[in-house]
Amino acid sequence: MGYHDMISVILGDIVEQEVDAIVNAANNSLLGGGGVDGAIHRAAGPGLLEECRTLGGCPTGDARITGGHLLPTKWVIHTVGPIWNGGYDQEDELLVSAYRNSLLLAEKYDIKSIAFPGISIGAYGFPVSRASVLAVRTILEHMENGGSFEDIRLICFNDEAYHFYSSALEIAVSEI
Ligand code: AR6
Image 1 (tube, rainbow, N blue to C red):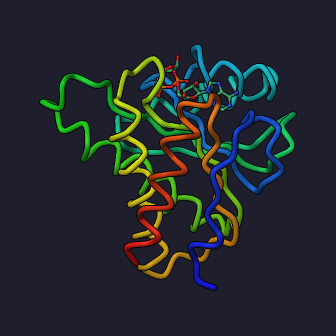
Image 2: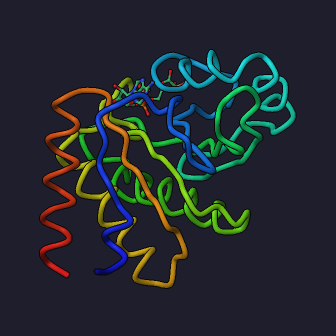
Image 3: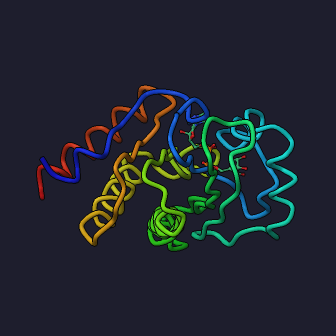
């Protein structure tokens, strides 16, 4: 038994996860959008957008926190992943920052269970195989460095994402 038993890959909808916090793959405005961002705002109700308006946006690779409003979660952590541009714009580093800053912010709020979507792999076009390895590696590193989460879920919305995130987790755990 190790901390990697706390990490799971799930095929499902992030808005249905009963965890302390869900992570939103937002954009710099934090004022809503399509994809998982749209789904979270729809499920949380208009109070979420109202709260987001007070935040003044978020730089790529950083994270902000709000309440969960009508969601079954207490918190929503809004992060902004990079737009894929062939790997020429520090996309790897920015994706790692998005995961790392989300985890660090969650620790500050004593969040023990958290669900992530596949940040940047939808509208932002980041290759899924590459994104999955970076996501899993960043989460495992955080736990190796003393992270105190009890339940970290990687929520995949389709079979392709599920395939990549679960093999990335299996490989990363076998290398520990
Ligand atoms: N639960 C879990 N995953 C979901 C859900 C859901 N309900 N809905 C979609 N996904 P994307 P990005 C998956 O495009 O690439 C928005 O407009 C989806 O299948 O949501 O970071 C923002 O406002 C994909 O695998 O996020 C930004 O403008 C993954 O979530 C932009 O899109 C991420 O896809 C951000 O793009």
